[in-house]
Length: 174
Ligand SMILES: CC(C)(COP(=O)(O)OP(=O)(O)OC[C@H]1O[C@@H](n2cnc3c(N)ncnc32)[C@H](O)[C@@H]1OP(=O)(O)O)[C@@H](O)C(=O)NCCC(=O)NCCS
Image (cartoon, rainbow, N blue to C red; front, side, top):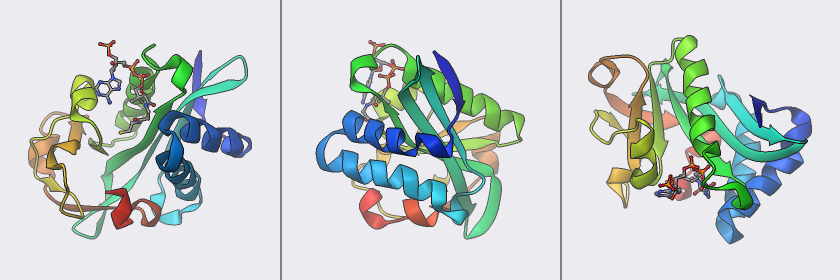
C-alpha cells in the first residue's frame, strides 16, 4: 500500500470511493464535496492524499485552508473528507492517511488541524475537543469539533472563529 498525492485522473475513482464508503445520500454529498474542494480556490493550500494498492484507491483524505476571524490563517487547516473503502476499513489505512497528512503539514509549518467527526475515532488520533477555535456554526454535536495540535502550545496560541473554504462552508455540511 502506497500513499501519494491525488491526481486529476483520480477524480472519478475518488468520487466512487466516497460514495461507497459513506453510502447512500451522504456518500453522494461527500463525493461531490471532495471534487468541489479540489476546484475551489478558497480551499488552497490543499493537500489531497490517496492510499493506493495494485492500482486501486483504497482511501482518501483532504486537508484544506481555514480563515481565523475572517483573516488568512496559513497555520491552520481542516481535515475533510476522510474515507476508507468498505472492504478495507479497520486495517489502519485511516490512521496512516491522517498521520502522513499531519506529517507533511507539520513540515510545511502548519500548527493545528481541525476536524468535524466522531470523537470516539478522532480522539484516538491526537484530536481533542478542548480548545478556543470555534466553528462557523452552532453545532448539534459540539464534541464533534476537534483540533489536533502539530506543535506544542498551538491550542493556546490559536483562538477565534474559523471558516472553511466556500465548498465546505455550507451549513448543511456542519
Ligand atoms: C472512519 C474511517 C475513515 C476509519 O478508517 P479505518 O481505516 O477503517 O480506521 P483505522 O483502521 O485507522 O481504525 C480502525 C479502528 O477505528 C474504529 N473506528 C472506525 N470508525 C469509527 C468511528 N466512527 N467511531 C469509533 N471508532 C471507529 C474501528 O472500530 C477500529 O477500532 P479497533 O482498532 O479497536 O479495531 C472509515 O471507517 C470510513 O471511511 N468510514 C466511512 C466514512 C466516514 O465515516 N468517514 C469519517 C467521517 S468523520
